[in-house]
Amino acid sequence: MKILVTGGGGFLGQALCQGLRARGFEVVSFNRSHYPALDEIGVTQIQGDLASRDAVIHAASGCNAIFHNAAKAGAWGSYASYHAVNVTGTENVLAACRAHGIGKLVYTSTPSVTHRATHPVEGGTADNVPYGENLKAPYAATKQIAEKMVLAANSTTLATVALRPRLIWGVGDNHLLPNLVKRAHAGKLALVGDGQNLIDTTYIDNAAEAHFAAFAHLAPGSACAGRAYFISNGEPWTLEATLNALLKAAGAPPVKRKIPFRVAYAAGWLAEKLWPLIQPDGEPPMTPFLAEQLATTHWYSMIPAQQDFGYRPQVSMTEGLRRLALAHKMPA
Image 1 (cartoon, rainbow, N blue to C red):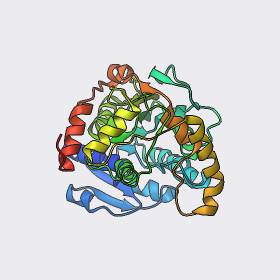
Image 2 (image 1 turned 90 degrees about the vertical axis):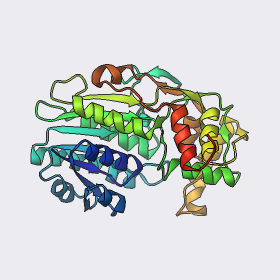
Image 3 (image 1 turned 180 degrees about the vertical axis):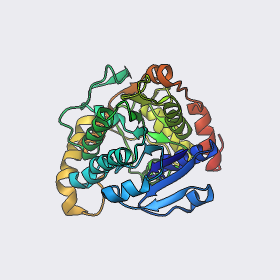
Image 4 (image 1 turned 45 degrees about the horizontal axis):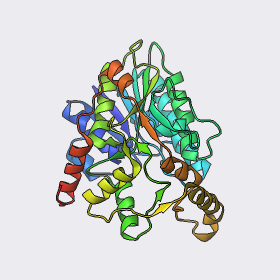
């Protein structure tokens, strides 16, 4: 079987490609750049832009399934730039499924599609946590549109599922942890609120495994077809404990400074207004969306994913931190 992975060069994308190759699948990765690491594991790479329908349809030629993982993430940027990748790109992936009669689509979504300011989520599932409304962050807004399109496309000929992994981390992370470490060393990292809000995170191997399990069970009429699922380690920790455990494993100083939510929110609002004038090519350290995310309890139930496609996290928080410390040559 031949599988297309969009964004195969990214952190989760490489884990998906590696896992699929280990399972004996032929893998094609559709990326903007070329990644030698994918060459080393026998992945065929096609470079192109997700916003180009012809390019996506071409990349999917001969494929039997698609793992649509590529996205423009982050908390900063124009709505148009997010829409081009996250919405138009997903439209093009669906067009490729129709053009080639592809029967399975596993979509990487995000819990951000359900964002509702400072409304806490405790043990949430896709059935009891509704979509967010009037989303102002372009990432969350465009991913919500895309997820709805993917689930609406589920049919008797195309089985679709959307997975919402929460804060993926682990060995090989080239984005989340490096940014945290850099800011910690610079003394620019702070907790929003008291840091005692519970949050979920997902070790990279567990995030990938959830995709493989969903794919294995996905078929027209299956329990997971046309549905969305939160994915995490299923071990909610406080924000303070999570951040400091990650920083310790990476050899960075702990975060001790705390900023009241109202102050962080106001600073984020001001930054959104002034940052394009101050540093047009950079990203502000805070936004209202980020302040809300950092100050609010968000953790989810893994029961639906377990029941519908057998997802069980294999790597605990403690084991993941041990592996991370080992990779950074730090004592566990």
